[in-house]
Image (tube, rainbow, N blue to C red; front, side):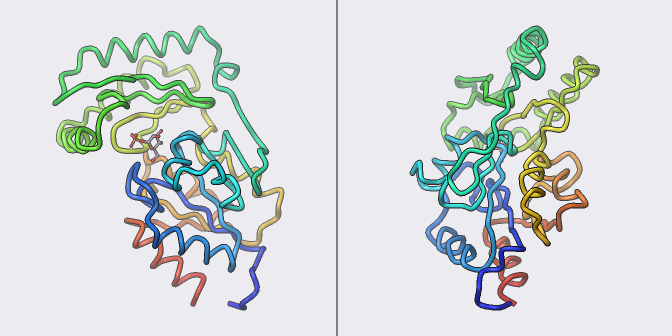
Length: 251
Ligand code: M1P
């Protein structure tokens, strides 16, 4: 590839498990890698988390929206290009308070019956474009997060919860997705990571490369990974991301 930045190619990255370890901060090595990549091609992030979590993971500065050419929080429902906000959706307007309340009541009832290694606080997090349901509670520590993640692997707590939600809300037009380690994302159909592609389509990229770790069916990277508008790459860790990007872009 020529030395000049190729603006017809964009690489977009999932955050947790792809650019960082789940919910942890970006390492210096990855930070430098991304900076360098920006001198070669256009670079974007698309995370399921809200902007404040992504900001924290990318080092804590509010300048994160300028750090990447595109930054898509909440699957792209909150969207930035070159530091300017270009999109913002609202789940409350989209599905209405009646359904929202039924969902929250059902979820709280369901979670109140679960017996887990421990429970903390913030079981329902209301975001701009999604509801995040968290059986252990989002205020758990990193050690409690790992403990729940292990318990979940053995007991399928979240999968059973998703099955119950799908059964109860089968006609509500909602998606229930297991994205990270401890929670479930709930959002209207179509509001998965493919949502961000409408912004990229306008800019006529020749190649849109997407890198994610949860690309299997049921994972929150699956739809964008399998979309005909993207070239999908499955990675297993931030290290693997660097390896695959190096092979693709610096070959
Ligand atoms: O990886 C994306 C997910 O990150 C968090 O998941 P968890 O806290 O369960 O590890 C959440 O922000 C979730 O919404 C998001 O999809």
